[in-house]
Image (spheres, one colour):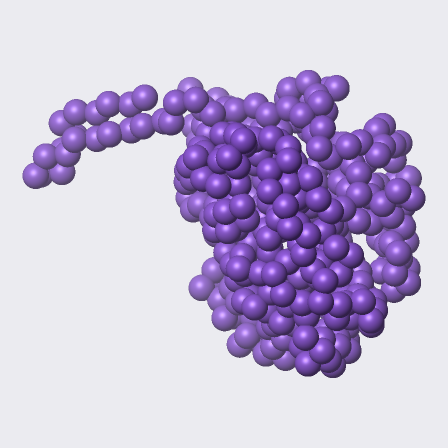
Amino acid sequence: MGKEIVINPVTRIEGHAKITIHLDDDAAVKEARFHVTDFRGFEKFCEGRPFYEMPNITARSCGICPVSHLLASAKACDAIVGVNAPKTAVMLRRLIHDGQMIQSNALNLFHLSFPDLLLGMDADPAERNIFGLIAKQPDLARQGIRLRKFGQELIEKVAGKRVHSADWIMPGGAKWPLSKENADYLRGNLPEAMDITLKTLALFKKCLAEFAEEVQNFGNFPTYYLGLVTAKGGLELYDGNIRVVDAGGKIVADQLDPARYYEYIGEAVEPWSYMKFPYYKPLGYPEGVYRVGPLARLNVASHCDTPLANEELKEFKKLGKNGVVQSTFLYHYARLVEILFCIEKAKLLLDDPEILSERVSAKAFVNNYEGVGVAEAPRGTLIHHYKVDPRGMMTWANMIIATEHNNLAFNKAITQVAKKYVKSKQLNEGMLNRVEAVIRAFDPCLSCATHAVGQMALDVQLIDAEGKLVDRKTR
């Protein structure tokens, strides 16, 4: 019978997971599975809560991307109260969203992925981490900290806190405006953030030649790609409609209403993971594999509405066929393009006089019993769908977390990498680290992505005083 290799835990990701690599009778890799091992039931314990508490509750599902949940949740609540947030409130929401994208993408690049890219996939794991990077390249590490700090300050100066700033946002807008003092502070720090981003882009592109093999083998396979775009097909992070592109660059669906996501996105479950498996309904399950996140967003977008990011997008698309880049390794490149885009967008917002308007809220109560909110989180398209009763109490919630969309692709990617690098009779650290590294390229956020449908698995073991297994019950 075949055996399996277990990587537990997967390191330098947000949340808890393990990988099992299944071998055939000849000890060759047959397939690999990505198991999300922690369970959190946000969709169920939100039932019975007032709808206006949902931004505060759901943001607690993650300490890294809480702003994304705040925005998707608030937009769902906007739909329930049936009002549009004032223009300035939308501008401020977009501004903190830019901050979220900058700080989260910087975290993945500098803290989680650069140890592999700059210290080496085969480096000693005791040194292949952020502390090793600080020791070897202190200036670069410092720049990463400064860039992430700028993103966090965009959030803090607008919404009051860097993490879990739910006191600021509300259905129909926001609770307070941006002060001129804070706007001036943020505007003054934009040049440094831009300089760091451009330098990091140049460094990454210089390193690409050293990782030609990884680019070719790290999750490099055809899938569909899904993300929000503007009415003209441009890169969009806060609003817009859904576009789906195939591996050949053909637009197979465009300007789909995000509020009707259930018409084209299905959700499946497997017994070996607490994370759901979304799929593109026209292709069915499991054939309907698609990807979201930075790589997918650049693949579906025809352009960026800012000059520097647009030029970089053109360069990025040259790495693929018909403008579609398929290598998961190049998620890192896409993150840098998005950081550049968000810095340019933040400058445009801060330079607009209306950003200081005090009209930031439109108040109302329940006018609709259902609402959907969609935004692009750092890791991909985030969907919050709520139903309420006439009193505004939650009766049902469905959250398709950005990370979940990539679940089928996770398993294809680790299988591809394992087949390329893992030789079961001569295992070494570098082999297994490459299997983990392709997951880091996706930058999964597992804490907010773990929901289960039906009965929760259970494994209870009775151990006596000598450590022997007396009895075991599983469900």
